[in-house]
Image 1 (cartoon, rainbow over the protein chains, first blue to last red):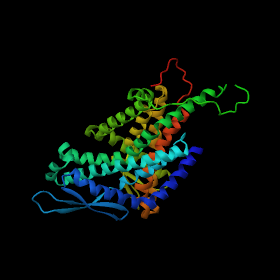
Image 2: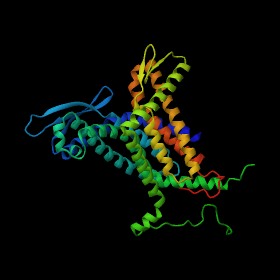
Image 3: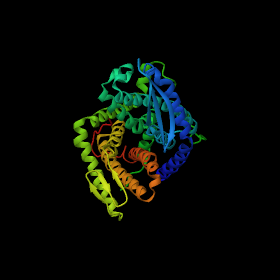
Image 4: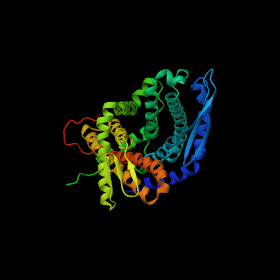
Length: 198
Length: 197
């Protein structure tokens, strides 16, 4: 019961912090993606801008294929990729059996891994969506070279759900599995010590 | 115990850093194995639910089940709603339960985490059943909650759906997993010779 109470309190605090910091976080994510996206698409796909409109961040891409006039693809909403930060931070803060200093260290490492994982996921999803919309640009980027156009669209959708639900849990587990194993051993030892009830 | 020695002051075993990769793997084998099992089983699960056949037959079935349960609960709360395939409709609001909303992927993550954590076969089975039913209930409550937010506070529907509900489902699922670790892993096993896998 105490655990559930702690979970709710931590979740509310993280959620309020996230509401305040989310625009800055998303701008950082967007600007990092805009710097890296051309490298993943031979310069064909670039982020034109990231705008906050009607509760969501929208990526506007500028697509510049060879021998063709560039154009802008507007309004790719990827706000779901901002939300997993709440999951990750809450899980890091409620994990039992970690001392404060160690928790802060893990949190710092975790945020860095988390951020770059989402930069990569955002790039993969943007490329997948752009390839599906304009198949002739697929030959110039790694998503198009690796997968068929239909797979591009499916993979983009899959990575959106994957990034939303699995990646924060995976990074948390990678960082906290050792403390969690210690926690498991402690639980086991506690149960062994407990006298058997009639 | 030696005279005068205080509790908690016993010399603790030190763990110097592993000198070779082999030693590191040997020492952390359980942790590494757990991560491999977790990632592999989520990958298998992810590929399976992306399969067209499974998507049409299994995913659709679960989505319908979730929609039916949600509709039943909404009616129990006194709002007259009608279920039409995967869509729940009342006089002022309507939701469509899509396959991504049925909690199957979250259940997959939960089951993978149960597989990964060192425990006996019996404990794993308890974990899977616990996770399956808990996530189903959490997901139904999420849909019912979103439905009521849609009726009473339509301006906050987007925030409730994308920000609150989706994060809460994952966090509550992981909490159920942590509660399983604390409540069920390591319980006295009746069967002799049960092996932790």
